[in-house]
Image (cartoon, rainbow, N blue to C red):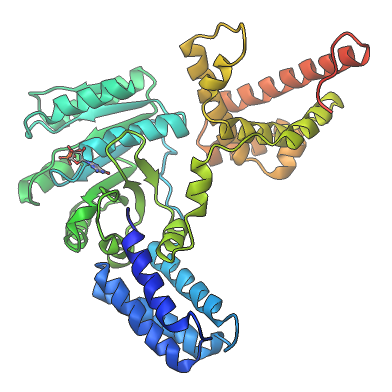
Length: 441
Ligand code: GDP
């Protein structure tokens, strides 16, 4: 996949010169030349490669690297931090604060726009508990709207479409429909073209003015190479994009062009597509990418993929705190982390013997789990340790705006927590009086 080509090539150039020796002024120069070649071979834009190398050089030769045993590690660190800089440093999140949030997807035909629209809807429904509405506005490409309808069926997300109607009118109706039906997210799948033309840009601009989207995401095909920079710049000039989604990075794309997007267009890459399945869309993490390119192993991604076993000791510790009445939101949050490590909650609930739980209930619990986690992430540690503090209105409204969730959802969390705490205390008393078996150390 993406980054692997460059990773291999970089590793080779680093090893060639510095594996056996420590770094000195001479072999640093030679290593930098090799790194530059590796970047160009990986299809990194030449200006980006030059700038990257000159920054590394400045630090490496400017006395930051001391000759000696750790010199290799030091160079690696410098290259890593400069790579992250080029890639944008931080994850660029979507702006989901407005309700409903409108995301407009644009791109050339075949870039993966329609597929990505449905993947994004799926991702945000699972990870952010959003209730999306997909809107098919490509009335020109034969079958485009049918394709979206099919995708929507598979992921259980409704698609609003009017095959033979002006897309502007359809978009307006879709927004009304979304508001009536409590959709908090609208994803517009706009028309594509084989090439950028005036007519397309006019239509997209009209749509932009009519719908005022919070996000305008350009979908580009990662296999295309350097040309994606020009395409991105042109779309950006016309439409003021908010970010880019790069698709097909699971193929043998060399990836260097992707690495150049941020630097050459100043636009963040927000998501990458790495396969045809619904789940094959992930936020773009500059740090992980820099790790991967330097062959440091994509530790976070691996960590996420491995289904971790529950940490028994931490559960026992939590149980003790629970029964002693010390249970707080920080404990609850840690528990949710444990639960989510075990995979999806539906599977867990089905493992409870004798429990009859409907798919709807499972879905609702899954949704709550996500919403509660998001809310708790927006609290300070102190607030989680002392949930009393949440009575303050200013704290409440800060958490609500920070998390993009509603007051109702925050109250729901606080109420569930208080109720749960009472039940647990009651259980603790019963256990002490011998009416229940003692479990948990
Ligand atoms: P659109 O014309 O831009 O709407 O493009 P589509 O969404 O129809 O995608 C074009 C083709 O690319 C389809 O066959 C998709 O399955 C495929 N595709 C989209 N994203 C990816 C990806 O990340 N990886 C792979 N391997 N294929 C993708």
